[in-house]
Image (cartoon, rainbow, N blue to C red; front, side, top):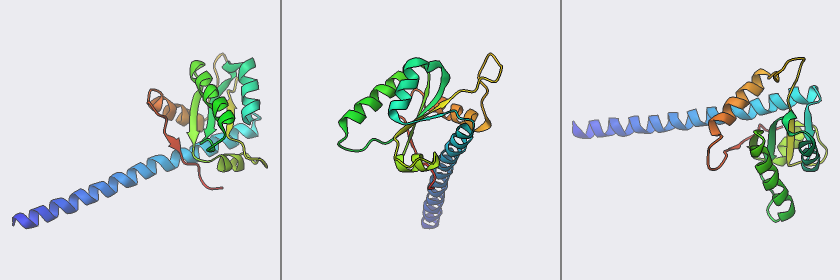
Length: 163
């Protein structure tokens, strides 16, 4: 009888582990699709700034107009770009701009329809004749995601959907 209970408990533990893995996968997958949706919508409204240099230029003039900064994993060995990205990330945090780290610059570029591979983009706020910015449903979900991870010592890297 004890052996049967131990087997049942072990089986139950494996089922719970599997459910946890599935829950984590479900939690991670939708945020990537939400990012894609938000990017496509913002791009259709001409609110996306693509590229590290363009992002730095816009932020130096009016940081208050930016909502999100999406940054892809840096390439190994490109220390100059890495330094710019680290400074950009710090600037964004100082100016309350949500930073979202994504897994792949190529996927980010493809979502944005870019011919060249870009490691970063900004999503600008919408100011539709209102004193506060107007957020889409996807942008609200991304704000909630960012707020949940704001104080994390290391930001999670979101896996973007394949394009």
